[in-house]
Image (cartoon, rainbow over all chains, first blue to last red; front, side, top):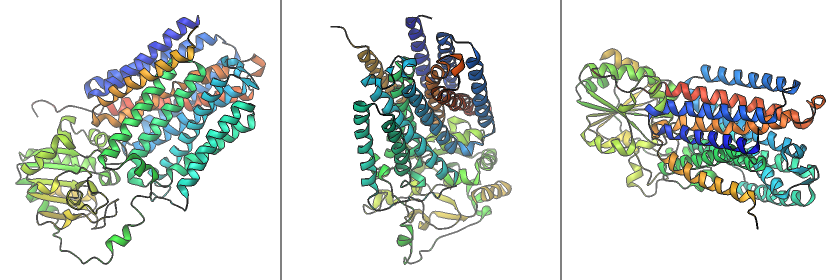
Length: 464
Length: 102
């Protein structure tokens, strides 16, 4: 196949990838979009195989490896429960990162295959591109592994901080840049290995200080990194499909991180530098006088909601932990039978990844046109009779609007307190991730339902 | 003087960032999770590099170091491609509209 024709095919698959993302602008077009993505990938792989044109034993091995990887991927895709989606995505990111590292290594070891020059005499530009690709890929790999461990609960979600942490990271970052400079001068393989090694370390150190509830930002950021790594390799291999894809994924991840940071009213650096929440929570809760709270049981809640004309459900990470989405949908069905109007309100950072709550509700067969984003629904709370908060906490805390001293001051919140009454399902009065007390607990119109989210929701359904 | 092909690739790269910027802003927030899984799948197009790396060289050198890294990258990217697209498909199939008359 001529190089020009090959390049055109790569361009076509790049365009199909753009259409795949474009399809996601609405659920109706999204399935077609995914199909475009699959076609684009199929084109890229087939034309590459044809262009190499080497159908000897190596080709059979290649097919075998493709099949092994493919079956593992398909198996995971069908088996994974929807609640485990955040860690799955983190895991997938780590694979992209590692694949980028491996391709870079193999380009470094046999540059003549990719027309990059010869061992010991690789073109300068290619050397920079492949070492950047390898370095970002390595950071993505170990960073995603840490994110995976934290999301999976294998590693504590608390931020891990130590003295001079940020300076060490800065030092490591600078040393990668210096090493790339020397790599270009000396072409030494040892330096290349060193760059990868330091980047692995940097990936770990960058993610450990970031706490569990900041994971939406971390996942989006790593998504972005995996894109930049792919683009770096794309430049090395002079491959248009890879460059386009890298740029798309890179900017997609960056936008998602931006949206997540805005949802918390924190700057990107504030999140990345980490150490937020978790450890200091004990100091703020102790020594405070006990304020009175009203608590109720499932029957009270059922009575309130049955007599309401409109109910807004506010789900959060707690719903995912308790796997309460199906029970919730059943409760809502019962309410609808009683003629109650029900909608769902989703905060941008609810859950552990962008769109986490929406997927869980979709899994429980909640129609997506009953689910609203913060800006769409926030004005409706004042006309709503009952707000049912299940597993959310900080995103409903009115302190964010009133107390400039509070760490979450300025964060956009769901105006739950404006509804006539609030039902707050929670195990205890413990503070949320930000380590601060939720003012909402002590309001007159709040009824606390102390129980497991799923159990409580099921009990309410029963008494409806 | 001729323009370095690198400049053309850079142009594609920069323009694609802009395309990505506008396309991703138009993605509805409720589909942000499928967005992440599908970007994951498409960034595994890095497999083309792995294919070239693994099929390079003579038949008697299939398991040279460079080729082995290529094969490893193929396995990783294949997990991602199949896993990413299929899990996206599975998620998107769940998004349903309200049934009429209910």
